[in-house]
Amino acid sequence: MPLSPRVAFFTDSFHEVNGVALTSRQLDAFARRKQLPFLSIHAGPATRLTRGGAYWEYELQRGRALVSLDRDLSLDLLLTRYRGDVLQCVREFQPDLIHITGPGDFGILGFWLSRTLDVPLVASWHTNLHEFAARRLEKLLGFIPEGPRRASSQFADRTSLDAVLWFYAKAEVCLAPNRELIELVGQGTGRPTFLMQRGVDTLLFSPERREPGDRPFTCGFVGRLQAEKNVRFLVDLERALLGAGVRNFRFLIVGDGGEKEWLQQNLQHAEFPGVLKGEELARAYANMDVFVFPSFTDTFGNVILEAMASGVPAVVTTGGGPKFLVESGVTGFIAADDAAFIASVIHLAEDRDLRDRMGVLARRNALSRSWDLAFEQVYEAYRCCLSGRRKALAGVC
Image (cartoon, rainbow, N blue to C red):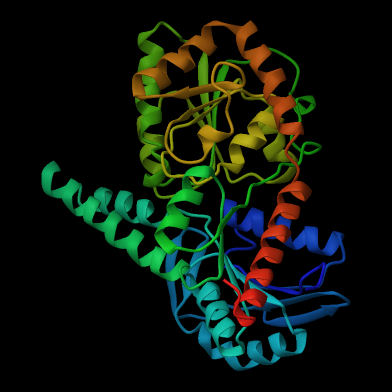
């Protein structure tokens, strides 16, 4: 078994602004930096194959038969038109395994190739698609009574989860970003499931980017402005701050999505700079006083780490992966319910010393989380996958 497996990586999101794309770009960069044999296959502005020693990149231009999943993310229903060219490329690269990021167009193409070439398949879980489906359906059915609406949402959740787990069960090994999902995916697929964490760029995201001078108490949010992020709760939070007598504050809401217009109409003290990247994004984080993240559906929460690296304490819910990043009462707060979430933010608004102490500890925590360490663990999972395939071929249980 090779020390550095030859990996063909199929990701459904690469150039977009979301957690899957960020993680995919970082894994791609890790392989290049370490000069590992790596074939990166993803969507791009034009179809082109680039061979650069151990690293190959094959970008495929999505066509017109698109299903829009978000403002900057689509699925190409006819991506299989490339299957002959991609099959030839993958054969030439001779991967030891294929890694896919989900049941999107590129993930399905990677799955087909793994079966066609009899190459072991690794599937990483990045998004709780079942919860997204349920939240978006509940929003769409807002015109019907609550009982039937909730029942429809719960049915969508269950059926979507069953379908996604069926797909992931086709892999030899699965990867998941937190302990809860390791258990869910492992039990639901019957496959060995390993941790795939995330890192953060602590040089880019730093408290040193905070601008001098006084400013209103700033509650920050970064992410897609969609129903599954529970962003409408920010309106409840604003009302609670005003009701508690907090007046000199603002919301800094970075991102875009279908809920943006509603938030603009219903928040009185909010700024919407849109999607920010690079140093602009890093400055935005550094100028926050607390990072508020009311989502229950995120599997990890890269934005939590970016805020913490910027010296900003975070308030998160008990749902999803963010709670595994925050040490409640030390680097921020994990709120058991809406009332606790609001109380935590008000507490930080009223106690500058507390948020300064938490910010220092949040930064210290982020410094221990590197992308290299995260992906070294992924490569260990790759080796376990190949070891399992070798044992299976030898008839060893």
